[in-house]
Length: 171
Ligand code: FE
Image (spheres, rainbow, N blue to C red):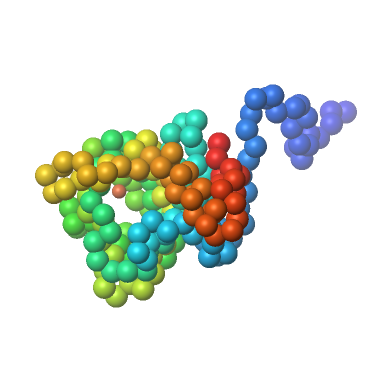
């Protein structure tokens, strides 16, 4: 008789050099101190800051209407709207609660939160770098996984959690 292995966990050790998983219950509904300020009334909540592959996963929370930023993506971005609504000046679609957005490499767009939205929360995976630009494409600033980690360290230290608090999100 052969043994039924359908419910048997994997029996071998994981690769010696594999990294630990990250598990965050209720990621959006967290202690205020975990929301890292990015601008006035704009915060991000780190989930996975992947320095080895150069991307970051975060929740972006915005409590203001109007233009948030204009930026170019040399690499793809995936977004899932958890709350509220937003759009880009360059496109006629609207990203709404429950909706998914793929931003292909080469996109330059200007993110706007409509006046009637009190709070927007979107889960973003951003790869590589985000370049902030003027309307003609001149770069005015950038963000990458390392600037995100630095912002987290500074904020977590100031919030009394210690700058090492970010380490749990870094892979
Ligand atoms: Fe974007």
